[in-house]
Length: 273
Ligand SMILES: [Fe+2]
Image (cartoon, rainbow, N blue to C red):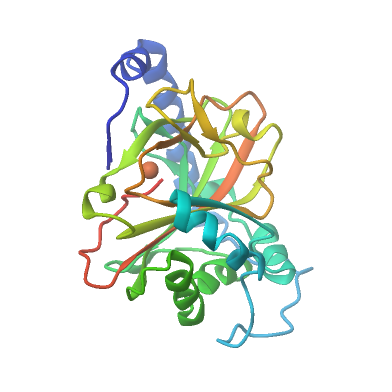
């Protein structure tokens, strides 16, 4: 759910060849459904688990806290070296195959959506998830990190992780600049993390979610410098738009989207991208 799309950009997307592109993807999804049944996504044998995630294990790097003041001042922050190296290695290697991603017929939000979780549905969307990749989700769910998010936001409100999603943007995909529906819930009520796991260069042509001053692509406020283990954190109520222009041929970005909301807030499904 999103708000304030640009009318002329939406009009351009409604051209017949865009619908044709979506139809091609939907056809591919029907093949993927078959592949999913035949080929469960298992962890690569070259990845070793020499520890189990516990509350004491540091999964998110110490670099996170250094950006807190920027977030509190501007309503967004960019964190480099987001996951600690061991967790990052697992998330990268365990990233689910394309068979576990689907394109929803949404003209404004065109990218493949993979394993996901919401507070309401619990783990319903995690079919076939790779155990290595799950480390990434698990580290974002941990109570210790949720407390760090509360300190990061700095408003002393109790928070919870309300949804997790994985997304894969590839050539031809796009995300129209928009404001999340969650922005209606007030300042810092919902904070989104867009964690870039992997991607090509340059980030803006590869599906690197960026911030814009208007709902067109013309005035970028911030474009991530790298799509390898970085994160863009933004307050959904802040006064700017997020999205990415059409991804160039053979470019891609893989990202995890985590949404943290204040505890007494109603949980929204799929309100981040
Ligand atoms: Fe969004």
